[in-house]
Image (tube, rainbow, N blue to C red; front, top):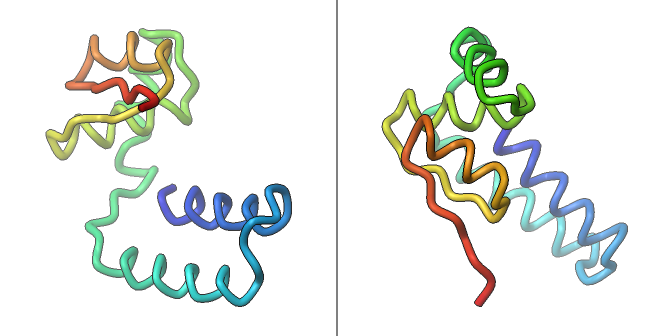
Length: 101
C-alpha cells in the first residue's frame, strides 16, 4: 500500500495542487521506487485475517485495519494524524498522534 499511497500523493501534487511539474514528478517516482525496492514487503494476503478481526472488533475500515495489522506484525509504532483512528489503533498497538506544528 505504501507505493500506491506515495504515487497517489505525487499525482495529487501534479494534478490537483499543481505545485509539482511532470519532470520533477517522474524524478520523485524514480526515487520512491528505489526506496520501495529496499523495503520488507508485507502482503495483504498475510495480513487479511488479523486485519479483518481488528476491523470488526474496533469498527474501523479494512483499509485502516491493514495498517494496524502491519504495525502489529513487525512490532512497530503506527504514526497517524487522524485522531479517531489513533484512538482505536492504540487499543491494539503502539500509536502516536501526529500534531500540526
